[in-house]
Amino acid sequence: MAEISEAIAMIKKAEDEADQLILDSEFKAKEMIDESKVNADNTIAKAKEEASEEAKKTVFDAEDKAKSEAKSIADDAEGNLNSLKSKAMQNVDEAASIIVKNIL
Image 1: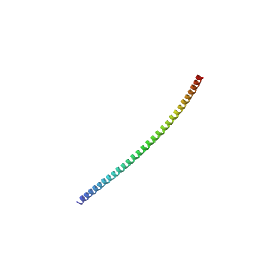
Image 2: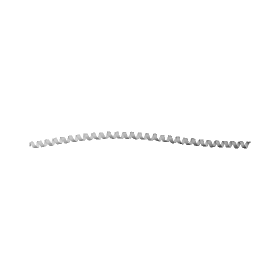
Image 3: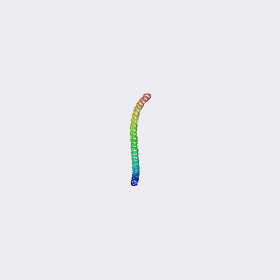
Image 4: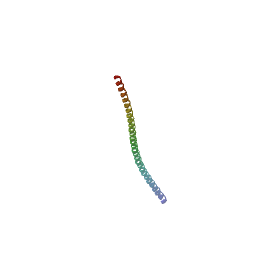
């Protein structure tokens, strides 16, 4: 009978240890899940920040390129204007010369 009592006590002790192992495992699993959530949130926040910085850089680069192109277009336009002005002045001189010849 003592052997049966000892066996029952050993079974009870094993059940208690198994229950404790289950509780410990559930606690560790919850800790790991919580830590994973924090890490995921941090990773997402970092990715958003990096994407935002990259977007700003892209906008600034596009603005710089647009300013450069606008300056180039303005310089070309000014050159064309000066050329047209010069040609127009030649026509004025020619017209004045014709008018003077016709009057005299």
